Length: 370
Image (cartoon, rainbow, N blue to C red):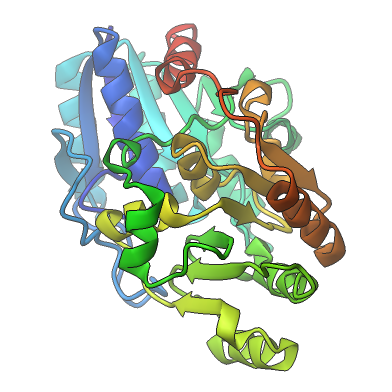
């Protein structure tokens, strides 16, 4: 099948770029011909809160792509449509995660629709995590041009149907992110590289730090584990897109400064491999949002996970063998779950489904929509 894919890929950074790249690889592995169209510019510099939206990693998830789209220049939208029409795809797949792209995507999808091409949106989140009053209108403007949709949780399916009742929506949980797992290190080597002792449990919080990710509850939970014979340490790895000083003050007040390392920066793949290899578990204490790319990475590395109900909805049931699920915004429940995993480690030999099958499920879902 001929497929045109619109979305971020390397050199853009982050979970959605990784997701798009791995999806393209999975589609190609199944014999599909994929035309990938990405962005000349993803956001204007003044709008992006991070240091850069480019990925500095050397070990790249590289796919062949045409970098055509600019959110502010309509002539790039027209060029994109012409390129897609020349390809005559049987399916056009658009990655959706932000209403900033709503005008461009609405125009693109509408033009493709009028050409008789089938448009499927892959929904990462229907609405932004920090929602504004006009976001539902913008989302409806763009998404109404889609023929069908793939959501990654039942919750997001419900949100989508509240905007566009009666639409065709399939739910396909977030696949495991395996792009770095093949480079994993022995735990002892990774610990030495990071300067952490071998006899202390190590927790990992990974990804851009925003209010909805619930880091403050994890810090509270860590302070409740000081009575353990071997109290855990925590790496917080990711750019802080809010008040860093508030976290530093909380850490000091809780008396856990000697057990928390704040890495306030985008962590390239090479360093992420070391962190995931060294960790005993990944913790995703989200209080809102949808699925978690960090959880997908953790699963790819075979790490036990402690996640809230917000994140658990995006993990396939068969991948939850070594996952503990707790209520959102509950530091006591977080601490209890972490303690349980440290006191009673996962049983060796119980593995989730093969990562390839995980991505094949998504591929089959898209195939069924053509």
